[in-house]
Figure 1 (cartoon, one colour):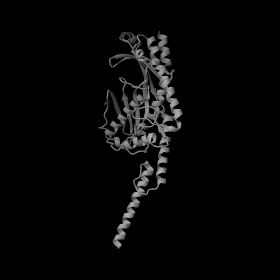
Figure 2: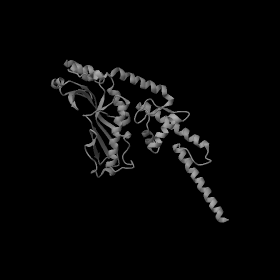
Figure 3: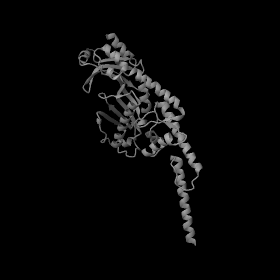
Figure 4: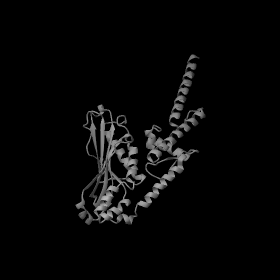
Length: 348
């Protein structure tokens, strides 16, 4: 009799323990519980808390970065364990739940989700941006026409996409983790670009220099920004590998890196004759207070271009997520290249 009671008591205790674990897991991640007899009140509370957190996160990302959240954001914020769960969670709150808290604008990789509560504001913002792009970006025929003089270069500046290159970032790790730097590789290939890592043992600072002057990253549409963040993510993955940080405990996430400096500019296609004639003005360096502009010809691929760029040193060194938006807004300002355009106008 004593043995039977002991076994039954053990089974009841195990069932209660499993139920408590399932309840705690559900309240944290919002997953569906399989324990029979589980309180429905706890399930609804878990769903509500998770939906509210995701909506608040989406509003914050849109207000700060002007974009929606992705599955990567859920993982970095601890709202999902893995990639699959993060994607399923976003799809659930966008398509399957009755009171939807998210919505999408257009397909992209990774898919961006925007907060439903401020949908009119999001659509108005994206519409105004699309209208601005439509009025400034030329047709395919206009792109094919190359400039033959400085006057034509000047006229094509508003129709040329903004680009960013020579991107210098920094992060901090434990100095004890980089005492032995034989694994740090300089000029690590990144497709047709190169990334250099410069560690400082005393402070634990690691400077990441993404050299892409031959292939600058465009900053015209959301898709271009996603490509840039993807490249920075590759830099992050290589640094993890170099420091043997498989569990991502040493190196901070790349969204927490700081942007130190970069070059932003526009590459205007020119004819071969212009490439021969324009070097008499090449290179030109203009300095205005704390700003430095450069104007010069360059061969990208097999095509000559005339580049107008500014070397930007960000004194505040903002987080990379905010810095790209800041640089993009600066480069799309109509008065951004005014010193350079005024100089070109005087040459004519």
